[in-house]
Length: 512
Image (tube, rainbow, N blue to C red):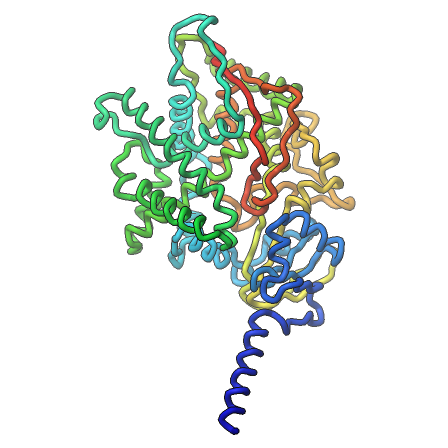
């Protein structure tokens, strides 16, 4: 009998341990935010959260206020929805709130990459050196050269009669061109000697980058489920196939056979190799860099071009600025003439286009910014209240609903206003208010603080270069001028720039 009691006691203890791990015994302590564990043990609210993050968080905000803790897949996330209080998260030391601790688990699952101990320092230093300031000159030129190859390779002598219209989906076209040009600018071009001539090498670049894009799109469509770990059996097999393909295509040994490899990519390889990283892991890191650099700019270019096409006054203002920048540099576009050279310095003289980019991103970029709580701590709200946060939890911000679409901060937030981020005298507008108080974090498509996207300046240049060339070299229009702007795909909340639920047919042709 005593032996049986021991077995029953052991089962009881195991049951209690299991319930503890599932979060069944967690209770709100004095001074903590409101706690909402959800309907399911361990899973909590994760199904509703995945279904529509924005809708779920808005429901929680209305129920609990500007700060609350919810259970999502075994973790407790405290969401802060008051933008005036964002500084308490953004400015907190990494010893208390660490972005990299959370990110390393995600990139391991999604890309198969395991971080080095000081990876965040390497990324920041290399990005600051090559993707900002003067370091942008080289990579901006590389982007321009590859955009010209992909968009303008069939320019030749002729007349107005041989300028046929071409038709495509706007999303498919934008994503294809921007992704491929960015990939080639970063990872290098086919060596002319290998292909016997420069023209043949450019043709190889066009062909191989196009094939890579279609494989990337397959992976991109699986990405949300992969990040949440909810792929079905066949989807898991496809994701593994695609991972292996990209590890092979982007292998360090293969990339180093190219020419015009960006200094950012080359140095990223070199620094990790010097720290003893195995080459197979370097190959996985290259895949991570490809997705991080090109997974959002293509969709962002679609939204920007679509908003301009649907708002003629915006298109006119941006086109006028583009023409003025070209005129100031003495460049003129004509059939049979030299291709324009759009430099980093020219891109610094486009405040109207900058505002249009910011406005487009405000309406379509929706990252979830998450930090791991490294020790018990307190968060202080703008109203003076403090809330205790437990070690091992997560703290998150979702700026899209909290500030970017807040009508008090941005009046009429669902309407594209190309000059929303311009002052009356044409300078960049940085003063926005809520409750009579100035907000520091009024638009956060790139995140904020130590986790702010280090490649944002290159990404913005990619967008601007693409739109600049489209406005300069092409006539283009929607096949149906009355086509409504599509809804965003709510399954992708939290992963950067949103994607549309459907594509928009358009047509384009060379102007000259």
